[in-house]
Length: 285
Image 1 (cartoon, rainbow, N blue to C red):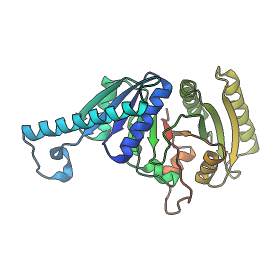
Image 2 (spheres, helix red, strand yellow; image 1 turned 30 degrees about the vertical axis):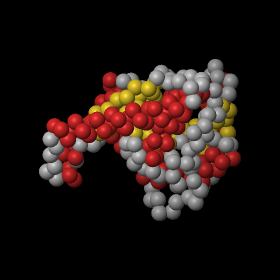
Image 3 (spheres, rainbow, N blue to C red; image 1 turned 90 degrees about the vertical axis):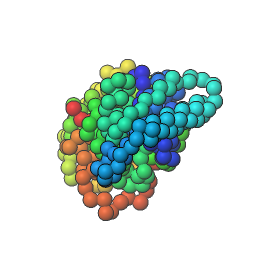
Image 4 (cartoon, one colour; image 1 turned 90 degrees about the horizontal axis):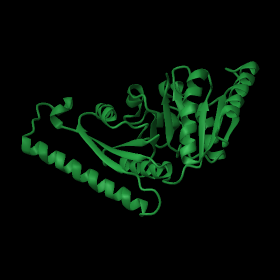
């Protein structure tokens, strides 16, 4: 893992996510692509027949470059000059967030995409927030969604949560997550979340052996395994984060897992607790 791409629209939440991402880059010793999708009113369907002169367009581009430079300087100041200082490259183009990120990743390869989200309470609502859902469908890179309440601090404990209904995809994601854990020096907790109505005793035993074998084969010595039983997935995840002092939660987005249910179920009954840690979403496949 050599580079992180941090998307920003210069909003407070996006700036907070950029600070979190920069801090993570310092911890992982990677470079940073600071990416902005410049919105051109004439290219927005809801804008009607708005047209910009060349002077106005140049003004927008200059404003965006100035804002990127200001943010870059703010990130560098956050580092304080001590320790590893990531190389920050500003990247910018006009278009939708998804299109710009896709295009910039072709020019500036990065192994992880980071963006802020406005959702900050129920886990299901958080997963649906902002551009995260669309990006998860389009990008092969894992996406780190950073809520406003996430603390800008070293990642010390990472949890991977799954019901392991698609073990091959989960194992592939875990392999990538081990690289992140090694780069940060964080402990990695592989968590099997289930309810007894959907999982047989034989399946639970099979999953346990699978994960223990994976841990044994890994060269990383800070991996552990645990089981969480709860009828409400959101509640089980929130308990996991709180009880195990998790700094970052990782999951795979595939249609057979509980994360798919979280994304497509009704959110009229939200959990009361908050999800204050960033979520790392791996694409299935």
